[in-house]
Image (cartoon, rainbow, N blue to C red; front, side, top):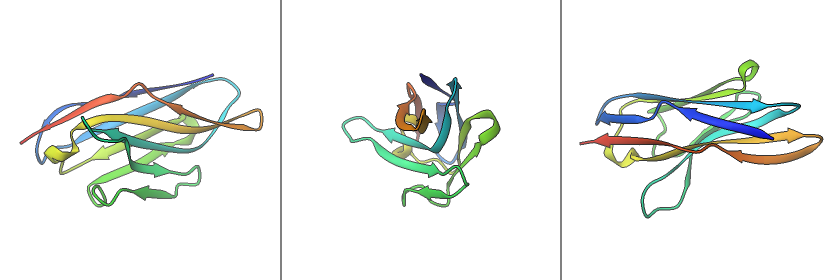
Length: 119
C-alpha cells in the first residue's frame, strides 16, 4: 500500500505564488509517472501537470508558462510551483502517482489540498 500526502495549499491573491508538495510513502514500490490534477466546484477533475520518472513533463495549456512540476525521485516527492495565479486556478489539487508493485501498476491519489485565489 502506498500513501500520498499533499501540502502547501492555501489562500493567495491573484498574481501570487504557491508551492505544492506531495510525498509518497510505503514499502517495496517504485513510481513511474507522477502528476497534479485539480477539480473546481461543478467541474470535472483535470490534469494540471505530469512528470515521468525520467523527467519528461506535460502541462495543461491553461497553466503552461506559469506552473512548473518537478520531482525528487530519491525522496518519492513531486512538487508544483504555481506562479501568476489566477482566480480560475481555484480548485482542490490532487497528487497522483502510477506505482509499480510486484510487477503490477496501480494508481494512487492524495487526499487533496485546497488552493483559493482571490481577485
